[in-house]
Image (spheres, rainbow, N blue to C red):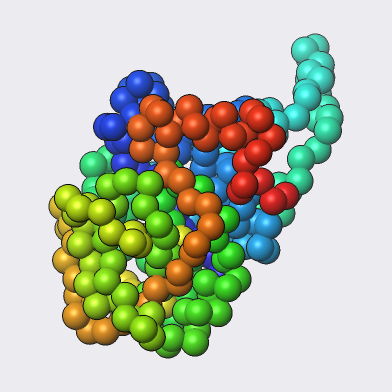
Length: 260
């Protein structure tokens, strides 16, 4: 099952960092947050990634193109017979990363639609945002998705703030999705989704359409949105204070998402 990560937004609320780089490249400790997300998925055995690139996507391309140079000590022979010797091999040798240009300013629905060609026909896929960390059990979320037989399962988490509110019935069917409401709610959209291939039928190549608006409204209307409730750690990196908090957790050795 492929892991699709939305990496194209401009991260305007974190302008202190995103003025110079895309939000998925903002570091937590020595590595960008997208690396932490990928390491978390790989812990559950999912190592085939599709990154939906947009704003400053070239920086993400360069990071992974030069991944060995970025993560290993290197010895270079600079003579006519140049040689490169890599030391301290990393544990990501089995990762497969597709870097897909999905548009400089496209919204989320369009970005996902544009990577449809990288998802095998009728195969489910995992989907998340490139700026949030959690201790969500990926395998349990997949099991919940299969049991529900719905088109999409998203992880319902307790809010750190300002996110899409969910009304959830006893059978975990979501009956209402409100994007960034102005009131406190028990659960919000935490990303970390599981999607059937049929999800692409709800998406459009219109760059102005957000996944979290008309497409999700339609999925809810059709009774096809399932909730996987997560009571543990979940933290986005949407502001500078959240950036500092995640780095404090990492630097203190108390990062809950570090399970590898």
